[in-house]
Image 1 (tube, rainbow, N blue to C red):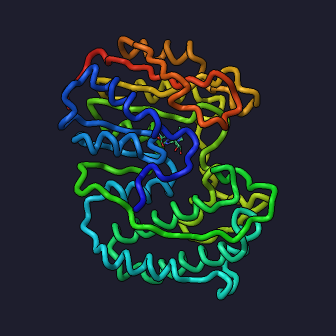
Image 2 (cartoon, rainbow, N blue to C red):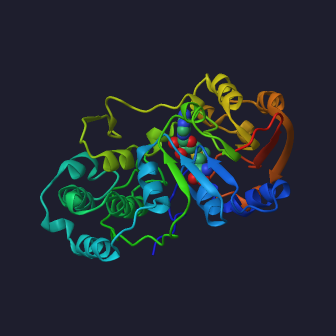
Length: 341
Ligand SMILES: C[S@@+](CC[C@H](N)C(=O)[O-])C[C@H]1O[C@@H](n2cnc3c(N)ncnc32)[C@H](O)[C@@H]1O
């Protein structure tokens, strides 16, 4: 069975969940019924952790493929396990070599996946679309999430789709699995620009984990976005990215400081936790932080009293980062003029 953390996702906070929990408990020893918002939720592991501790939760990300997964993991709708496992068993029995080329294999075969694997993925996704009227929304999202996790596992990449590895991809075993879902979490799910979302929500604790540098997440995960939306747009270039309508995040541009300040000003919460890491000595230009530590502190200090917690890199380092002394930092701000949620 799949767990929510079983994804390769840049900057995911799976390894520091208990550190974040410890920090929150320093302010709120009782988490039950606290409202916790994970506004740049990525995989959703942080929101899921707090939802499982009894918090009412908000999860949000600008990427649709993440929204698909949140609806599977956090959704409220009942689902028919047999329908899902029958589809999964059928999908796992398919052999790519028996199939004809399709949109997915023509786009990504021989690049991010072997041609046979890509044919199988495209065929399963087409069949899921045909089967969709037989499924409720949650069942559809659970099967699609299972496909997303399976695809991620066999991709010919270092863990994201900015580019593919310089070797011919081998046939791998694409296996869809059932999701190990916690029942009935109390969660609101969004797929919005964080700055728009915070005008609509409030929470006791808001956790912010924005992109830190010039690398766009939409570019890292374009293949999963395409698989999720499945409107088969034209792609371009060696890496087969979207030709039109690309999502870009201002958090990865020179506007990062201005929009971060706008976000903080608009936020309605009592405790604000910001994850930021010290990639100041990064080797490549694109890895350099878009907001300096001094600016971050200045912006947060206007909102309330700020404490800084450093999490030692040994909890976090994957050994694959392109910089040294990697530290994950949590800035915690006790908001003045707090309001009631
Ligand atoms: C550092 S990752 C978050 C990782 C997450 N905490 C986890 O544990 O998986 C940053 C996330 O912010 C999202 N993002 C970027 N710009 C955004 C925006 N303007 N509004 C909402 N989400 C955004 C990205 O898609 C990405 O998933």
